[in-house]
Image (cartoon, rainbow, N blue to C red):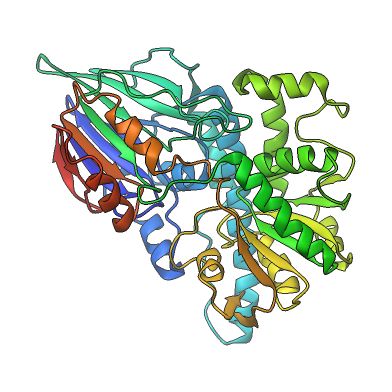
Length: 464
């Protein structure tokens, strides 16, 4: 038994972990790497293995850095099944089709600029047709339903509490009479988060492949996050400004809408328009509504009593789909709120909203999530005074504010609790999906574990 770390190794994007067992190959995730554009194109186009040699894939959830390179995998020869929960299957199909459309539309815009500069055109990373081809491979499994993705592996998906439908992956492995329980955490959620049930912790696990995104940082409580959001919005509204929020279309957008719904209904904020300007987020929210079986009890109770009759719907909220609707938002004067994808401000409509609003000091760009290195979102979060958007420089005159506490990832304290849940059986702890500082800080808190702790680099192999 051997794992090769093909992505999200010593970084936080492009999750891919290849398990070899009994002569078969099982891939855990196939995420899109996000970072410096030249690196992104090369890394995502070139797999460090033959996609046609894979037997199966298991997805933990539908975020683009976990599922977003499946179209390239299928186009390059993968012919097996892709296993996930019902909600993740629905959201993944939606995510990939949207991603393919964005890849194509962004290239059209970019190639117009390249033509004016006398440069050769470039191809999209993949097309909408490539993305649509993935749907034939998606297979649904309910939480806790055992299935056998390859011989010698019995898998179970358990609630990860990260986004709706997210899962930790429990793998009971057997090779040549030797049995091992391996658990892949996926992205670990947080306790007592709105909308979601708490994560299921590891049990009797010998090898734990675990994310460590916030291994160096505890989070504020969800209640503190709501207060922080309210304060940023209030001071921006007093300037008659717009609040522009780069927001992941799946998970973060719905959490922010739910929070805004509550605080506005409670009279804690002025009644101003709220726009969700992302076709993906709009469609994803409808999928959330179709899967109430994954909501926590608090959300189910809220739905029963809310006068609007929808978890993510209230009278000031507008979901947009068309380009014309999106453009019209920029013609409106503040105060107002715009939530738009992508979450790291790398592609999609958020780029147009930033370009149109970032040089106005009345406005605020609100950061509510972790931003990968070399992304526009990271540059804004780090306070850079000039940024490039669609190849042109803009001066950052808008306020850039960050509110912690909305993260769907566990903070340092719960990551430690999660790792210790199988302390009596754990032999190997493998930290992935985290930068060096985060991994080092978490490892320092776990030195008393009797397990060996690894932080593998991309391309490394480990016997289990």
